[in-house]
Length: 427
Image (cartoon, rainbow, N blue to C red):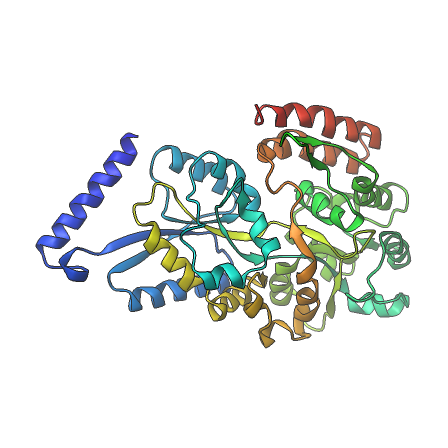
């Protein structure tokens, strides 16, 4: 509370001093909005900063201050800033990180603040990722499907059927293809599963998996059913039975697999769509690669995503001005610029139709074809998900994929231990 009081006092003093000097619109002083961005790739940072400059040039009375944040520490950093009354006015985050902040009263309900254009320009299934209770607590603006990045030469030499969004591989066919692509000194696939939970849960939607089930009383429980097991079993069996997946990459991040991919050690790597930028920058001369859709199951090509979001702090004294900045930042043309900068897909319908996102170069058209099947991640509105993920699900999946525990033990950990964690958030 003390930090909040100091901030308010500083703001009042700033406005008074500006008024005495005759600065600001109508002599009332200039408003400053702090915008914390998590853009990190060079092109993405450049696009975001350029849009902030354009806003500032067109709105001299409402200045936006760009603040650089980090995906690695954003949850804890935001929690500290919220509790200390020092949160940025405009907050860049991901939808699966918003539930606790929304229910905790730290984020403003955007329902009365957003323009009709912005509301209607983003599909309802995307808005559902930022809806908690009766309020909307973030604008979903960028999304990223998981795809297969494949070595074109190895695909051609193997003679396997090349999947398309219209005719994707099934999970069983994916296993068969991975075996055919394996050979001396080479694995058919490398799974980078240092963070295994979101990848597993989001891809499990393609098999009809849900994992989290909400009862009539609104309480959420974990049930690890047959459909939830398809993707974990596939990965486990590729590593332990088929020997078509590298065991050494299970603890790796996506970037860690790229040198081996370029060297022909792995024929395919399941990655987020944005990794194409790194591949374009780092691939050796003459290396040919292509983007394939992830395998499909009973749920087709459906997969879960946690869109990047923009929210407004509940403590911000300038919510209307912050909402106007969001509306400016997320105009269709601007959303395209942000998507191209981050090598991701925009949520906006008009932005997604832009020709720049439908070219076959770098697999843009493949990713865009998947956009209509992207849905909110299974854990999207589950309170306590960050703790469940860190303390229960991550170690459980890591141990299962490495062969340390079996499927029954994985189920028990996810359900028994997981439900104990979630119960604390649902009293």
